[in-house]
Image (cartoon, rainbow, N blue to C red):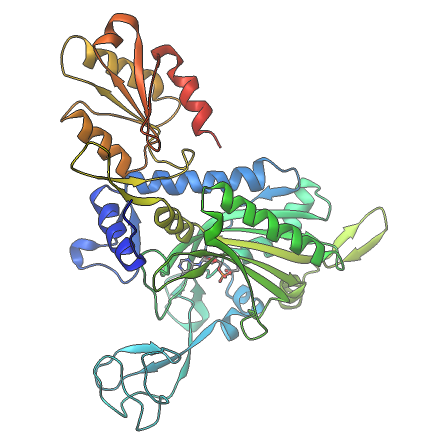
Length: 451
Ligand code: GAP
């Protein structure tokens, strides 16, 4: 197996993702939009499978978490209450000469920005960098026909706030009792100053967030519980446990809302190394108390058995769907030699439950009833999982094309199939072939692709 370093992997993944229809640059024919990506036919399936696994484990499999789909646009006061209008900022410097912008802590800047010695890392001029100024990462737009400050609304920078403002709606309509959680998956937007590394840091992305409401005093227990649960979930996706680690936030790293926080980090290798894919935060009663203050509406929970009211604390789990997709791609990408063959193969070793296509179906040759039987099998299996039916080219090449997109099984219809109703099933990872009755295919594959 050839070992590939991360800069290479990212380059090769960008190329594979475009060539095979996983991910395209947004508005590519216009030269592209900065750090925004579109998911193609295979990418949308992969990301959907990931989101389904999250939703199943967080909502469907539990009776103490409810689902929600709150709107992206919210009342502008939400973002004052949440602290994002005042606190969601990065220090930014401009170069007066080349007009480029950087985060003030950009390591390539030599000297202190705003002083004559400071040197622009792009054009190399000295003394042209401005003093750092605070730059808010929220995208603004206008609601209604008048574009003035009174009509300003924001694209949400996290999905969490939609959950807090609906806390009592969900609790009262479902009659849940604390402790319980609310989960949602949705788009978030941040005008990042230094986006990049493909889909690692983008300006439009999807989050999978869950806020767990608990009685004050029990928050650290729940925090530890969720930390472990979330790590286990990432391992269950097939991410190599040796590439997953916790990173606890220092006082300086803690977000404005957090009492304590751990990142679950994945080793992307190369220059990226270990990076956050999910945050687990103890947010205390910061959010509910701020919304209570700013809205003037009580958000207390009524604890009926004890006849008392209190403001719950929140333990949050916040994962990035796109960043986890990137971790899955990096984790699964391999270039391998194949014994007895000159050409090696590229494999995307995705967990079968996440693979966009579950089975490739091929007639060995285009005659003697094989294409007809392959078509019948494809039509029989299609209602149960995505399949790809391919009749063209050498069989080895058809296998290779499926390996490269992570298809766990390839079914081949040969001369014997037509005679006795059996087919061969090739396993992507072991390359072993098994002959089974065609009418067992559905169960055989379902058993292996359902998480
Ligand atoms: N509600 C808490 C929150 O938003 P965060 O640590 O800022 O916490 C959570 O974000 C997750 O969202 C991150 O672990 C990451 O996976 C994803 N994320 C954040 N910013 C991102 C960006 N610009 N591009 C892609 N994913 C991002």
